[in-house]
Length: 137
Image (tube, rainbow, N blue to C red):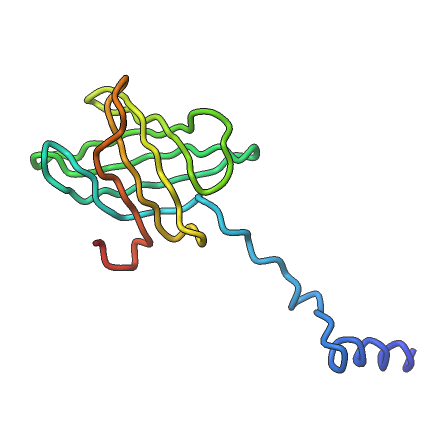
């Protein structure tokens, strides 16, 4: 028994092998999260909150909200296709209709830069987001 305890101590302290506590897996970075940013609406950059979730197959879905002439506009997002990685294409839906949003996340998935557009148009309007505790730029 003493030899086993000494062996474990030697492996963890001297050799630097991780213990069960130290090896608890940190979740992998990914697009799921709550992002605060700006989007171009009716010719003005307005604050937008974008919340994203990822299902078991890695597809993104979510919601967003922004102020529009004193009213809150709420919409839904769902991923188009099966792309994985930092560049994704989503479809947006709200009271104005629907269209596409193409976003590219940074390597840590802390921020994204995107372009949105109405259905059947090339996305060309700003939509970005970052950590809600960081300043919005």
